[in-house]
Image (cartoon, rainbow, N blue to C red; front, top):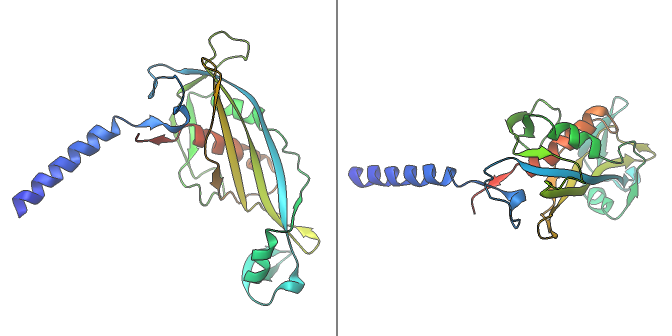
Length: 222
């Protein structure tokens, strides 16, 4: 039994070491680019729009105790019923962050890219690590351009009574990648990140760009 277990461990280690060498970029799936790439991939960023919405919470509908956020030194309690209904009462929220293009370009110019290690709970930019940059930025007119990156982000927060919350609740990101060799556009699955930062802050804008880079550098076995 011990001998068989030891043999099984050796096999698993061999499979793991072989599998790690086959990790590929999810963002390159469906394109004509070598995956993993053998040289930096020439990309440009077209547009990355940002919209903001807030779920309207009415305290009169609350009958019981879910602690959502502290505002002006007091804790706002909202019931599960109110929270469930809030999805039907979303309104647009004015924001200065309307386009992420410049911030994403700033991130992609770096030799080492920052990515988030835990997308479920992002409260600052310290919860990130660095990875090698597989991309090279070129202009949209360049004949060497291989991929076009575009997309959008949706910031979600809350309005309790007549006051907007100070922090965001979640962010959803959609990335579209166009293979310029074929003209085919590959739209990936939306990525949801639990980014809880001060609304409209420079730090939030930077975190959104890092989240997009995190999406672009995700690796998988396939």
